[in-house]
Length: 511
Image 1 (cartoon, one colour):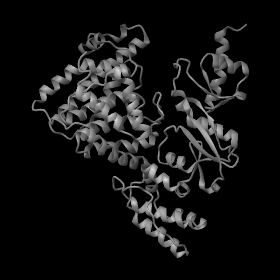
Image 2 (spheres, one colour; image 1 turned 180 degrees about the vertical axis):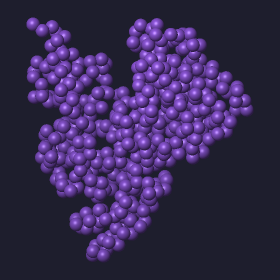
Image 3 (cartoon, one colour; image 1 turned 30 degrees about the horizontal axis):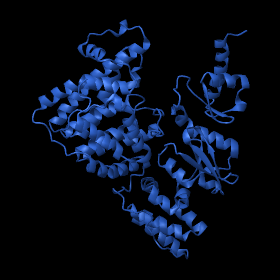
Image 4 (cartoon, helix red, strand yellow; image 1 turned 45 degrees about the vertical axis):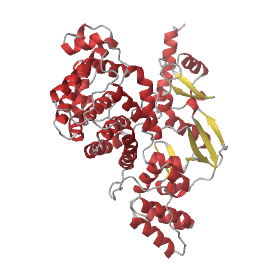
């Protein structure tokens, strides 16, 4: 008789085979009852709904949502394909979200299907799929994006109701800016006789500064015999001018969110004290904050470090080879990397205090901070030297977050635009809040984004003369909730208020 461990190994081999084939949604019929029950019992499989499962990690704590949020889109595509074949697509509004790079997990995924049930299907963590019994757009107006059937851009813009322009202005403006000429829109507007929609899209185009496109839509529809009344579906004017040549929805969303969020930040953040008279005195205070900062920042990321270990690492009185436990070694190497990176960040702060542009300094030197953060792990053989080469080249997920960071190709567009915004920003408070938030929103690295975001925040704090500020471990839940609200709901106020409270109270500066 096979030992329990051998039986589990057999079941895991079957599950691995499914995963190797790219299968995220596991149906009951994909596994024998014995394998399925064994994997469920040991935590390697999680039930989403009756007869449907996803792979999971047995060490995930009760109520852990990470594996579900990471699986949501692939699971939804597989479930909908199984249920409706190819006779489904996401709603026009949800299609616009995905087409403009917003892959946050929605509470309710709206789907069109001629055989839809007009009712929700409950999923994990209060999410659901609502399949509306509606006709599909033509085959030419459906495209498959990452396994999901969505409206093509021009068809989605035509199908979106007026209310959605007002409810999601950033995404709608980013989608409109992707339209390089009006021909694809016009062919659909003319074919369907959509004179009212033509007037709405013309007004929307004029709202974002595309007057020539608006004139083309109105003029062509009128030449075909239609009466067009141009109306602006947006409730306001865009916060920025959208360049005619910048069609990246990721960059346009970044720039619009930056402009909108900065207004809230300036209402909340105290006036900057201004650069200190003594650079040496400021850097001395930074040094004094090191132990507390390292302890809290590393602990927030799940490392088990003590003030004693941090002091030994700082003084060089440590020998990672003498540490027996793999986890203890990782903790020690992380502490050493933090110390090395802290020194590089301090050098950058020195330049900022000497009146160099903080955005330029951070753009040029953040790669040095990152390299130092992980250099000890490379030396120890835990990471490859290539891991320090640059931004991530694959997807990444944030623990317990409904926010899905941008795809790797989008990161390469976003990071230069992000540092341009930091460089051009006149207000130190905005650099502080959005420097941290936008960095972790983009999540340019596989690991270390939180630590890097807090380093960046403190360099920007120095640019206004604010003190080095520690995010304390005991406030981790508040901190993560505020970042989640900004990421998923585009509401920066809770995060700005959180940082204001820390800056004013000086919390965490000594331990």
